[in-house]
Amino acid sequence: MKPEPEVILFPKHARRPQQFKAWLSAILQMFQEHLGRQGLKLTRQREEILRCLMAAERHLGIDELYLVLKKQDPSIGRATIFRTIKLLQECGLVAEVGTANGRSKFELKADRPHHDHMICIECSRIIEFQSPMMERFQDGAIRRHGFVALWHRHEIFGRCRDCLKHPSSEEDTKFRVGQADQATGG
Amino acid sequence: MKPEPEVILFPKHARRPQQFKAWLSAILQMFQEHLGRQGLKLTRQREEILRCLMAAERHLGIDELYLVLKKQDPSIGRATIFRTIKLLQECGLVAEVGTANGRSKFELKADRPHHDHMICIECSRIIEFQSPMMERFQDGAIRRHGFVALWHRHEIFGRCRDCLKHPSSEEDTKFRVGQADQATGG
DNA sequence: CATTCAAATGAGATCGAGTCTCATTATCAG
DNA sequence: CTGATAATGAGACTCGATCTCATTTGAATG
Picture 1: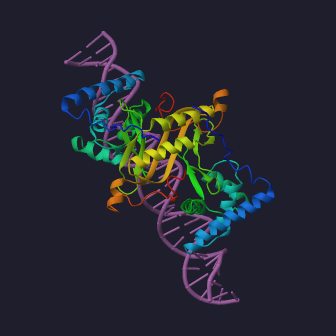
Picture 2: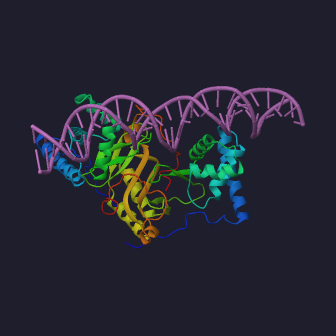
Picture 3: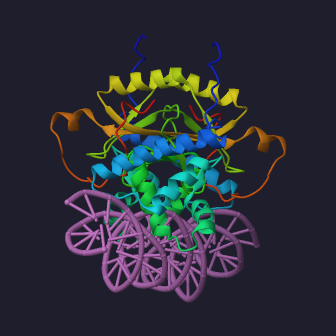
């Protein structure tokens, strides 16, 4: 089986200020259009939350988001973050990624290639991966069953390269009950 | 792409009383061995919960399990069901399947071929499917990243064949926020 | 720019799945 | 049978997520 191509998934492009600014305003406009279509408004808070997700160099959970945002706006409330994340999911700009401890993280989805996730149960790192062939066979299975797919969740839990090298690192040792089959059990 | 083979996944075998009895006692013994290894005991409740999962013709949630078990043992407590399900997951006899509404369902895993799930957001039906090729490419991706997989979750949310035929059937209209990409977004 | 009004906000109440506590009961090895 | 120890059921508790509501804000309008 020949190896599939590796693609840089996390948006390291748009890290230079000029590019980031352009990227941000493009995405913001998409958000505003979605909001406008439902008679909703673009507020300072919504803008900041989206900016924060776009500027992040990794997947963020609600609490991480809350702490970061709190620094520049101490009055921001958790409820607003939950509400905004939900809106961003609804318009397809943001996607949820499960973790081993139950607290979901979020990633920017707009403008980025489709991918799935491998999640380290030791360091909580989320590794993005692509496999077009895997997707093809998945879509084949869906078609065979006469199913119409709206979204999917494909998350592989285990230990990442780094945690295998130097065993037991930091946070999140309390992880979801899971049995150790061979490989993924399939 | 030639079609992959279809396999009967839900254990319709073992529906005849004699076969079921043999199957049950084999699985019960596996459970007891796991328990014994940890100094734990096989109780009437644990036995009943496992039997219930084995006899089920579909995936059950905690509440469904609770209601069924309550009929033959009105004193059974929810906590016991949670605790037992956790034990069964730990020894690999049972697996959790997510649903669109947050309340997980459970399935017997022992003795059954590996498969993934398509979940109908209208009728909550869970369709089991297999794609060995998909698994192969998945394992390839895992290897490429130097990751060691312990378990995975591959769930496709959408509408099943039946719900597409006669739109909007029963229960569970309140489903998880999810955007309608083309296909599965990938 | 001021006005207007629906939408959005933050604080805190509430919800609910899942977990924990603890007094009582059951298992099972000897 | 007995004793040590695990398991149970009831209900308190946890904590992420949602809801409520009084107040504030966005943006369309004149």
